Length: 272
Image 1 (cartoon, rainbow, N blue to C red):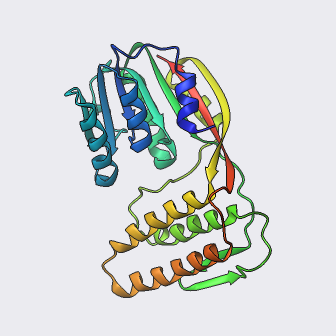
Image 2 (cartoon, rainbow, N blue to C red):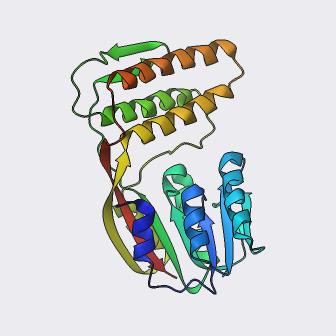
């Protein structure tokens, strides 16, 4: 099942026509979904400086033609971003993985603070799992270990290779933290929500089919965008050459549009 379809079905019992909704850590998918609900007020928050997501969301909201739909840039861990009791519903779709560990609890606390009494928060994110050992890994800049042509368990490992590639620049602080930091176990989220004070915490799991080709190409484009902003010409050139190794490996596998893998998600509903 598609992630957004699951969320839509899970919250279909609620009436949003007179509601004020916060899209926390907005993106194309969540903004479109929430616009379709036709709430009275919709506030979409993009990370400070994340112009890419912000502009995409602005375009979606403009089509809705509602002056009470807006995009703002800010830090969701900042309690002063909104006044207390500002929202009836808060959606955090794939937000937590983009937060540093130190900001998860302040953000959940702020959600509680910003919700009206009886208001609800919906959290959907990837469930933490032990990643399978892959056959090919980066050990340092410009060097590789292993053989990309070894037999593989599945083509999913080529997606994980992009993640490893992106981890190298993060270690030397080339990227500025807009990638996912960590997939938090749902058990942690459940405990944190209870600690903050949420009531009626309901949890469920679902699996979503992910297009392997689409996922790889999306991560590839993201990597190229980030590398494109590097001013050191030698470093940029070296990273692009490394990236090309992965592209060649991907092309050599002849992965079709129909090939998918399953990704596990958790979904929380909690009430103030």
